[in-house]
Amino acid sequence: MPERQIDINLEDGVLAIRLNSPDTRNSLTTDIRDGLAEASHRAVEDPDVRVVYLTGEGKAFCSGGDFSSISTHNDSWSTHNRFRQLMSWILPLVRLQKPVITGLNGAAVGGGMGLALSGDVILAAESARLMAGFMRLGAVPDYGMMYHLPRLVGLNRAKNFIFSNGIWSAQEAYDLGIVAEILPDDGFQDAAYVKALALANGPIEAMGLAKWLMGRSFETSFEDMMAFESLAQPLAFRTEAHQEGFDALVNKGIPDFPAASKRDSFYKFSKEET
Image 1: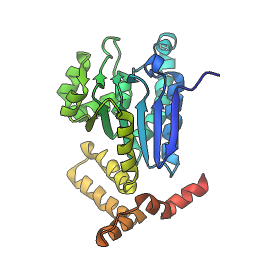
Image 2 (image 1 turned 90 degrees about the vertical axis):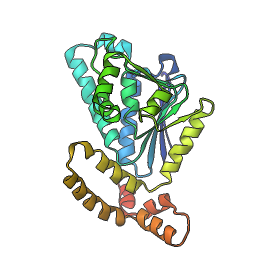
Image 3 (image 1 turned 45 degrees about the horizontal axis):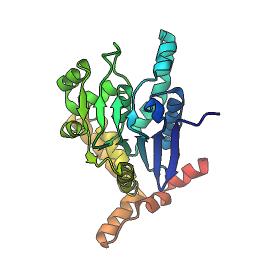
Image 4 (image 1 turned 60 degrees about the vertical axis):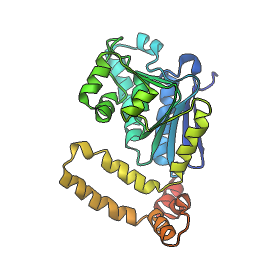
């Protein structure tokens, strides 16, 4: 049986998902797509998952579509089914009420770029690049790219990038506000993981609610957003994490948010279910 092309590991609250097929530049093979689906559903269902860290092994983050699959399964029905399966896991990943960190270790091309943009926080190695790549194949951008890119850089800039098969360096992506931080190539994975771990030690309940609210801000009126805030804040105030943070602030201590989460009845119920 061939080695799996994706590694999924949970440690200290961080669900690390590593695309591990350097020979194919981590293209979106069936094995990798199945692994991403498995990891996405685990991130939703496992209360011990506090943060998702998505990255690649080798010189590329993800080179996009797997050419062998595209060339042999490109009829309309097969393509439709492939994207229907994609919807089953990428939407839960994007809407996950926990932080998703992308560790952009190298080039992200086409669908690989769409996958990268699914993260809430994108950390990039100095040599990383974002590449459109769709128009050279006469294909429409996918993996959620048509949703995320215009929101990140504006409609006109997104159109020009897509139409011209654009390439952005890590620095250009940072200047555009896509990348949150650029880290040295040497030791990138360790440094990026430390940042993911720091978020895992934070109040993920409040982060999840804030993420849920911000995800609706572009299509929602100010009045409705204020109404959502008025509903979300009472929920946040009732969490063990809020009490932990408030007590630590008053007593000048250091909050232990992961321990607080485990005192929450939702965590206990979820562990009983699993």
